[in-house]
Length: 137
Image (cartoon, rainbow, N blue to C red; front, side, top):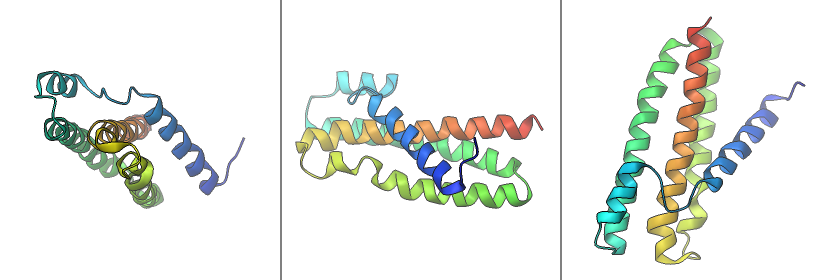
C-alpha cells in the first residue's frame, strides 16, 4: 500500500517513538548500565552516565549518517537529507516530556537520556538499513 511521504514520516516517527518508549527507561547499553551501577547514586552521577550514553549513541549515528549519505546519489541524497532534518526536529522533542519537571529530577537524569539514546539508536538502525539497500543496488 502506498502512503504519501508525510504519512510515511508520521508512521516511521510513531514506530521510532514506540521503540524508544518500549525500551527499559533506566537502562540503555552495557556501558551505561555499568556507569549507573558504579556511580555514587547521585543525580549528578546518573546525569554524567546519561550524557556519556547519548554522546556514544550520537557518535555512532553521525558515523552511520556520513557513510549512508555519502553512498546515496541524485535525488535520493537530497531526500535523505530532508528526512534527516525532519528526524532531527523530531528527536529534539521526542523525549522532552521526561525533562519538563513533571517526572522529577530522576526523569531528567535517568529516563530522558535513556529515551533520547533509544531514539538515536533506532535512527542509526534505520540508516543502517538504508545503507544496506544502497550497497545492494
